[in-house]
Amino acid sequence: MAPCIFCQIVGNQIPAPRLYEDERLIVIADKYPKAPVHMLVITREHIPSLNEVGPGHAELMAHAIAVLPEVARRAGLDDGFRTIINTGPGGGQEIPHLHIHVLGGGRLPGF
Image 1 (cartoon, helix red, strand yellow):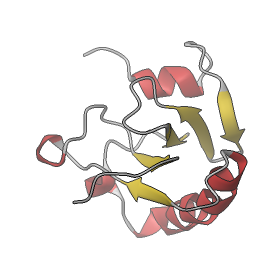
Image 2: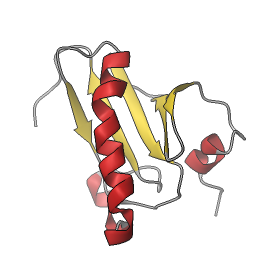
Image 3: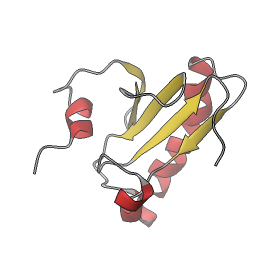
């Protein structure tokens, strides 16, 4: 199995400009954006998907949600933004490493 691309980005083995980072998370622009602004909030810890999140991850998940408004403000998303966590192949997850999509910057399609 190929090494996780997000783990390689977190480990600086693959370059990706960081829009935000701290001891638990990094935020990068999505390489294939689905909106004018499309960022990925990536956990430094390799967690394959939301299905593997347990009580021991509560603080990490709360932190990830808490930084979203600041990340959005830095990207100029003052009018609002959408967050998405795709989980598993049936949920549209393409990279098996937990991440949150942050989309905005224009009219977004509805559900």
